[in-house]
Length: 338
Image 1 (cartoon, helix red, strand yellow):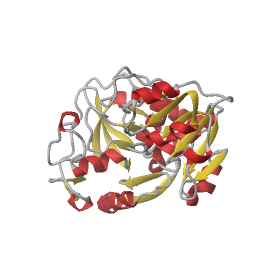
Image 2 (tube, one colour; image 1 turned 90 degrees about the vertical axis):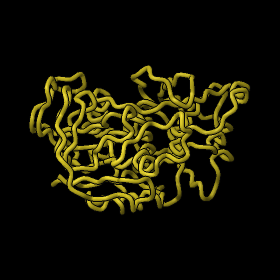
Image 3 (cartoon, rainbow, N blue to C red; image 1 turned 120 degrees about the vertical axis):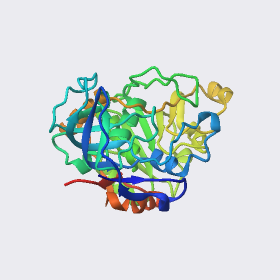
């Protein structure tokens, strides 16, 4: 089969398109004929070797490495004892989606024509989506779900001891989503609206029509004004950008509010306590059961998956170059099979 592999860490140029053996499913796994692969930030973090992550937090990498965790495809073969505990059982020919082995394996070999997948990580593909759109759902959708709706696991974040707890969302709740046009952001916006919340979307001006069409009640163009200067008394900030500048959203929150940075930044526990604000994060984890819930919302029309761009598997390098340019609207997806 064809797959993308890297033999050294670095920029997009290290990605090679080459022939590799088709893997065999282990007990509790199936073999998936991949039709499309969703791209996510951990893909390029792994490609670069995670140079900014402290050694004690860096997962082990074994080169050569085939990147990718998000797939949509068709079950091609069953491994021993493939009944599993996810949204299965599955049969050969079933159309499935999954976030594979995350974060146990930061990369699961999804940039390939075939990949093995734990049954527990899979759900049936939404009937209303083609494989290309469906591949954009797993990691971004599960991140939004586990931050906003249900954590679904007891694993602590590697960056914080406090356990993340989603807050109840409803018609009396205002949620600000920063980075609202991206993969996690555009799905989080829709989940908050599904729960009845009022949503303020923060992104660059080119995304306004897109985000209002998804249901944003208010839009802030961060290139013209800063949310922390004009917004007050929100219940929750989901910062899908996160990082060192995430604490700038503290003034937007009411006392008792919460700030959920998807990528943790620099916070002062004493300052948070004085403001009466909770700051927690989590690390998304594979869950076929939660993915099945998301698939039902997609089929019901409550959630849409938007595509920024698509690239053939052989052009994975170009896909990573597109990601590096930023200002992404929705998801970048690799197309593998018809």
